[in-house]
Length: 374
Image (tube, rainbow, N blue to C red):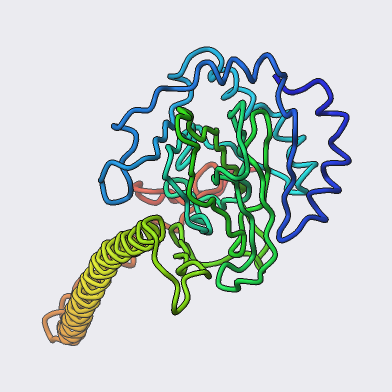
């Protein structure tokens, strides 16, 4: 499924990945076997609105299908390739990241189709898998567009700081069988500008996105968990005082304002979710603290009760000891001891008289021994 020359290029690709700017990445042409790539193009799913809902639930112009295995034999083969141990090892050699883990759920990934007019604001990706909590480390994107012109927009842009208009950026035209592998960090901003197809063009921007994870990450690269963070583009530079607004410019301004409103609403919804999550955690902490306090109080009560019971037993013990002492010193006990002294002395003799085996006899009267005549 991989191109026959891919394995022979691993060392060169590793050098390109390590030395690239604005952050570590590599662009690989002829990534797959051409015939296999054509099978993926032929089997790409038809745009389905049920797969085109955005973060707020509205139907947009981007469709995502994460279940690659449901798309036919070609995509099942591609899925197996993405999880293959040898392939993961090769990608690890290229990127210098060991222990890469494949995501069978394709969270955020799968097939991506973007229609005319769609764009993707520059963003940094979520940094932890939402279910497994693994560290997100790499994006692998394979483009499936037999034809594409850079003037149509839709080219992948890589940049380190979108807030700096002079920031260096790399543009990758999304042509078929071209793959991009880039490291996902807190500064790996990427996206693409609005797609503007020529009149009569009935095509769309198509790709497959695969994300890889690791169990650990260098501490200097680790950040608190966050969702995808988007940058909102400012007004185009040519919109200056005195500029006559054209219909296209007005539409672009409206699109920018609509997208900004959409992002504000998304951030508001996210803030509500965070607030609810924080409130639940605070309530849980308070409940645990109350339970801890109740448990401590209960233990203190039980400990005090145990001490009281021990004290009562010690008092009872002292009373019994005193009573026994008084009984032992009483006249009746002394008289009884005096009257029974002969019997007790006799019993003592019986217990100490040795038997035939050399041990004292027990329960037998003493035997008087007489001398034997010689």
